[in-house]
Image 1 (cartoon, rainbow, N blue to C red):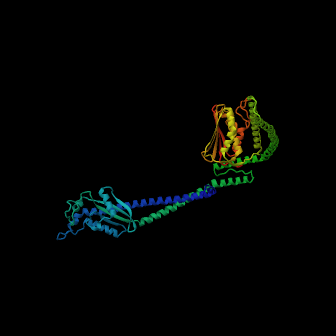
Image 2: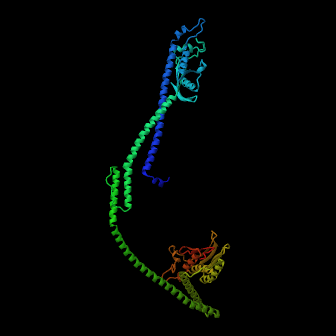
Image 3: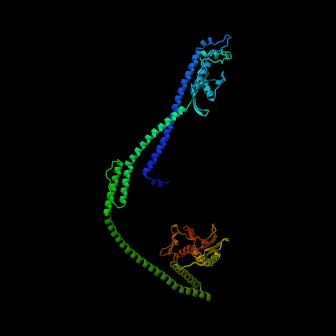
Length: 557
């Protein structure tokens, strides 16, 4: 049963179970304790009886031994044969007579006895050994004989002065009874008195005593626990039931419930007083609740009106922002489109002029190159603005196809290499042989690589180097495109900002490097559309490395 199941049991039931458990444990403990005490008392009583019987038998033995001289005077026949009452014979005979007339059994035992009937059993042998070693003055135990539980007791028989005539020295000499002497000395153990007492009467008495004690103890325990149960009911459970009914009344909306002083206990009175105080506070709170609800409702209404006005204002502002943004996009698209037509014409006429006639002088040739270069740069800026407008409007789509990055690098190299030669910059293009084909938008990837290489050329002084390299990524599911230069570098605080729109590192009025600041922003947008990423590592004065991680299979979304 879990904690929730235990919590659903009534307090009276728990105390009833606890009281029942206490009764059971107490009864078992009382039975064990009473049985143990009764057994110890019985054993002690039997030991005392054994001591008395052993002393009586020893007294008979001593009496016969001390009067042996008188008996010997009339114990010999005319032929000199001894036929009298010897102490051993008398003791054995009295023990046999005592055994036949009672339920007890007595005999005299010894190692190497003169009579085979006095041979010791295992208990008697252990007793004789203990007596000879001097480790015990008596020996007893409760044992089972012939399937019957009995009390066995043994006491030592010490050699006295009058015993030496038949059992003393020299050993082996024939005594008056015709047996060889044992050679014992005064104080030696000459044997043991063994007594066997049945326990049936004592066991029955013990059982009766235990039953009586258990009945008395059980009655007293039941009465005491019943009194405790009734007191608990009066002092605890009944007041708690009243409090529970009061709580239920409050739950049903009756806040006028109050408890009077109780005779149960001080703790219950304190609890009831706390309940009364709580009920009074709830009643007061409920009386003012409607007023508070009305006030809160009015405040909420005023707040909702303010929020509604603010929402309307925000909606108006958002509408203006959308209109402004649309106006900006339309304006940029229109201006860019209108600018592309004359720029295309200028570039076409410049190429036509170069094809039809050679420049008359170096100055004219430089002028022609400047016109063509600036026209192309301006056209590139306009294309970037148009593409960014399409991205904002969500009109840019991916044309995913199988793409060979070697072709991309070749096209970019053909565009960048003349610019590098004109600016005195070394351009290196390296493609690893294991670069796989990728699924990507060819034009967008070309735009990314061309933009990165163009930026590298722009910010690398004469005598520098720009390196384009393409390799397979270690995880083999992507391709790495590196564009490294030895240019001016980018400060650490500007390395993330350069990917934002219309941002350049040099934003001063008299900045040295031209451009719209849209190239890297477009590059990041295109790379993100493919599910890749673009990163930069740079240090001022030591160049930059842009790395594009392009998945082999682009997201076709």
